[in-house]
Amino acid sequence: MKKTLILALLVLSPTIFAKEIKVNVQGMICSLCSQGVQKKLSKVPGVIKSAFQLGKKEGDVKILPSVVITTEGDNDLDDKFINKLINEAGYNVASIERK
Image 1 (cartoon, helix red, strand yellow):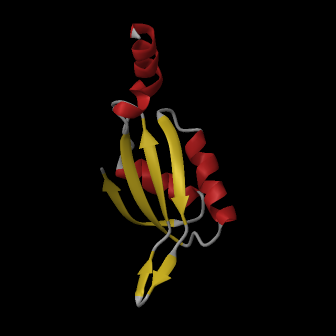
Image 2: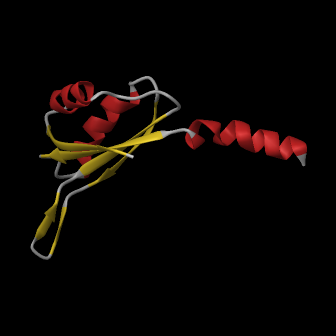
């Protein structure tokens, strides 16, 4: 039982203290677009994963495409770095939210 608990803590520890950054992106309209951003993010130290949601329209409300970046532990990406990264991929940042 103790070994299972220790193993679970070792496996889950990077995600327990993970930070999420949601970036709303203008101009990212298809899954191919998101792959370019994902490729850049995969090279950033401290980034555990990135998840993409393409834009959609719900009634009269337009929801921008977004990427949720998960960083491990105390790693954080500052807004300037995120803007630069998204701009280099060919898109513009509309907003950044941290959870």
